[in-house]
Image (cartoon, rainbow, N blue to C red; front, side):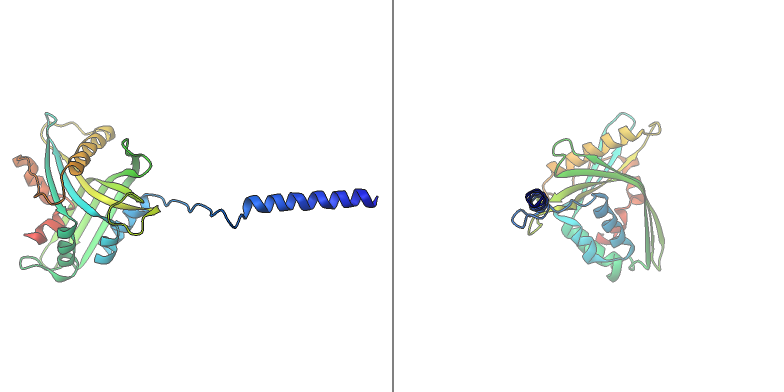
Length: 240
């Protein structure tokens, strides 16, 4: 009986030791969970609502840029690239707090992002994603009220790839681009797939265009007129 009891206790002890060695290995660090990529979009949204320039800047990669794309009835994509991060910082300070010679600062900003979805970037599904949604933005100033928005997308990069993130962080996401798409002319109501395709094409244009280049504009009168109702117009006009 004593031998059997000793064997039983020994077996239980061995199981406990093995179990602890698998679950609580002090030498092998556990991998940190990767955050949901929608969270960085929410941080971006809250930065606008709170008019917080530091929070806005902390959500962006060092090469962040805006892109505006207008798809006409024959499928041509008219593109305006910029502003980029440095100009965004200047415009955000003016919009949120300082004002400009032409416009006073905002007194309130509301941002609603409907149907926010995440799509994998086929070129690098691990480190890059594309978020897209329908944005509704209201900017109130003592001078006027802007009602902006439309179909918007965000290029997302994980922190172990995103430029300007030090030290690299594989658990969080940053925004590398903000993209707006409109459709003009005899264009039927665009399907989600068609909107995503237009967004992808514009994202590729942004990726090819170096930050130091001036904004690239493909002329279209109808498209230019719609630029003033897009979310980014709230920043653009403070750079005029």
